[in-house]
Length: 303
Ligand SMILES: [Zn+2]
Image (cartoon, rainbow, N blue to C red):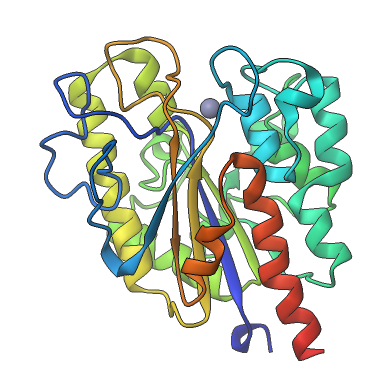
């Protein structure tokens, strides 16, 4: 029955804000960058009728928005920088882990009766053999909800993708996997999404490249990512599936700065209910409640 019901994909991109046009912005003048080519004070041309909501990542807290607190906010619906008093970079500290472990979207969905949930990203043996001291917000959320981690074997059979969806970084590490074009990766993520009620995918090379201030790599990364997203959307039934793309803070859209930006981030919503969902999103704290309502109201209606 899962295939018959509603599904939601949360497509998280680290470090993508809405910037202005200009030489500092690798998105400006880049062909094939839709749906990611979104600029301040300009209507966006978004394929598959996506609705763009410029979304506040600053959350009323002084300073530049950062990854750990922004991701915690996206994944819980709680304004994490306000809760801990500052934006927290890198990996979550204990206070943020406590918020994630109690309030993650995975747990909220489980409590609402939605149990077909997956984090689409692949973990390698290294992670389990030498567990890192610091873990990402997503890893903490997966663990706390008792979800299964996808491993390389899941990727090989088309049930998972690597954060670097082309598999290039996995192959560099010596894993026996085939490279995937952005188109192939889009097909795989569409299939994973349609086989689950809720799927999360996380991509963070955008943030790394933003910190490196490397225009050429930034353009390559954005083109490839945009192609992946367009192919993903082309393979989904958007009558049944809602896709919400968002980011934790700006970065790659302004390579004149090594730091994160203060720009709003693009939340883009696709699917039948895109307008209603877009209408309730103002800040990063509005993402999780919108997804939980979308899936649990459906669960109740079909029960
Ligand atoms: Zn980040």
